[in-house]
Length: 424
Image (cartoon, rainbow, N blue to C red; front, side):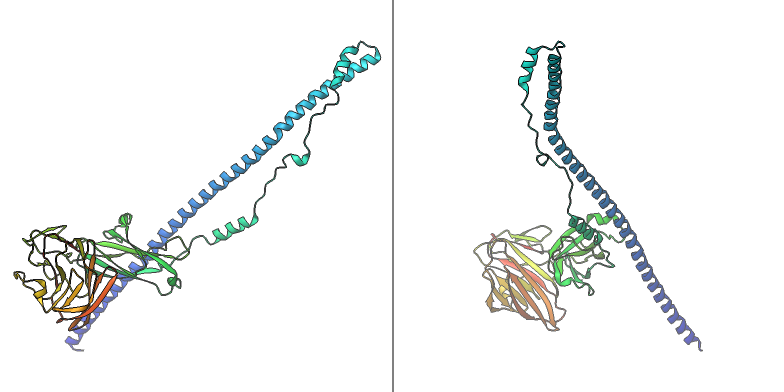
C-alpha cells in the first residue's frame, strides 16, 4: 500500500471515528432521556397515588363519621320519647304498688287508711300511650354494591403510561420577530381523528438544559390548527416550545411533547424612519404627521417568500390609502405607490387590488378601523410566486411574476393625516 493510500485510509478512518463518536453521543442522549423521564414518571406516579390514597382515606373516614353521626342522631331522636314514656310507666308502677299495699292493709285491718286508698284508686285505668315496634326506628346500613364495582372499574384503569406523547412538534421555522411552530400526531396513535383541541406553550430559555425554566411555560395557542406563528419574540433569544392535545369526551390533556428549543435571528417587521410620519412601538406603528405624506417603506427588504405580514388599520379616513408589497422602489421618489407599476402587489382603501399596475376584477372589503389585511407569499417556480391576501374572512389569490432571489419590501401611502397603521 502506497503512502498516499495510507494517508487516505487514515483520513477515512478518522472521519469514521468522528461519526461513531457523534452516534455514541446521540445514544448517550437517548439513554439519558429514557432514564430521566422514567425517574420523573416514577416520582410522579408515587406522588399521585400517595395523594390519591390519602384523599380517598380522608373521604372514606369523613363519610364513615357522617353515617355514624346520622345513625346516632336517629337513635337519640327515637329513644328520647320512649325514655320519657318509660319514666311515666315506672312512676305509675311504683304508685300502683303502694296502692296495692295500702289496700291489703285495709283488708287485713293492719292500719291502712280507707280514705287514702279510695283517693289513690281513682288513678287506675289511665295507661300511657306506647308506640308499636313498627312505629319506632329500626336502624340499618345499606349501600349499593354496584357503586363499589364502579369504583373498582375506575381505579383499575386509573392513569396511563405513554412511551412518547401522541403529539410532537415537527418543525420550527424562523420568521421576522417570530417563529412558525408546526406539529402533528404520531402515526401509531389511532385516536388522532378524535382530537378536539391542541395546546401550544412557550417558555423563555432552554428547558432541556435548565429544568427550572419549565415553570415559566405559558399558553400561546389553543385550537385545531396544526401550526401557529408565535409573534413578538426577541431576536437571538432561545425559546422552548411544547404541545399537547385533548380528545373528544376526555377532559384531561395528553402528556406534553418533547420540548423543542429555537430562536429567530430575523428582525421584526418595521417601518423606515420618515419625516412625514410618527413611528412608535419599535417602528411597527405609523401615523402621518401631514396631509398627503410621501410613501412610507419598510426598513429594508424585510419580506421574503414563505413569509406573512399583517397590516392592521388603527385609524381610518374617507380619503384614499394603499398598502402592499414591492420588489423595486425609490425611497426618494415623490410618486405614489400606484405609479410603482411593475413589481408591485397592492390593495387600496376600497378593496381594489393592483398587481404590477393592473387592476384586478376581484375586490376585498373597504378599509375600516380594526381591519387586518394579511399578505402571504409562497413559491410557485423560479419566476413566479403566489400571493394570498386575507381580509375580514375573505381571501383572494394571484400569481406574481418576479425573478428568483428578488428582494421584497412593503409600503403604504395615505392621502390625509387621519390614518394610522400597524404591521406584524
